[in-house]
Amino acid sequence: VQLVESGGASVQAGESLQLSCAVSGRSLDDNYITGWFRQAPGKEREGVSSFSTADNRKFYADSVKGRFSIASDEVDNTVYLEMKNLKPEDTAVYYCAVQFGLHMGIGKRAMLDPGRYRYWGQGTQVTVSS
Image 1: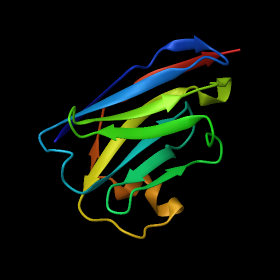
Image 2 (image 1 turned 30 degrees about the vertical axis):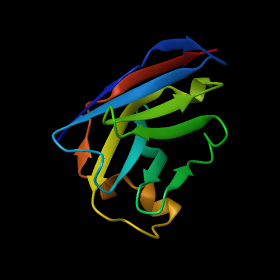
Image 3 (image 1 turned 135 degrees about the horizontal axis):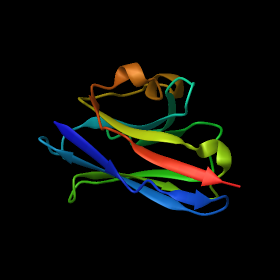
């Protein structure tokens, strides 16, 4: 399974970006969980948003709730992260991750835990200037 992120860029505060994560090697028709994570210099990787197909639940970190939106497209086998009203503190390398299987009833903290995911992309840089 391979994941390739794209869409990262340098933007001004208040602008929007859409990140894409193309998944190959396995179909998103299967049950899975997917997440977007980010890592800023000198900081730990943190969960931004996640989605479970088993119970159709979406989760967002408090810092991005209302501004970011996660979605997946089974036809394109791609996971997306729509980011609006970007802030300088959103600057980081963004990673997508996938773990296949039936995951139900998992809470927000666990769903945003990087350790739950097996497959990772290489990351895409998002830089937001004020």
